[in-house]
Image (tube, rainbow, N blue to C red):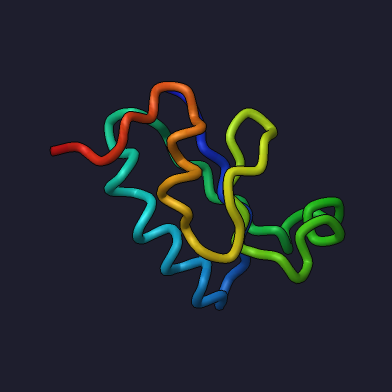
Length: 82
């Protein structure tokens, strides 16, 4: 299954909201890998003040808030399940 990466940090309310909104939209089509930026120095330096960040295949999809329109740039994403 293809993976959508979410870079977040513990205690981040925006991160929690974004993940909660994202999961039902991609369920069954993509795996969501949540990465705590504080667990690695390189992630912490890159994403310090701009979490949450959503990436697919190394490409920025959105940050701070879930951009449902931007999700359509992901190959195989055809909008929410109906």
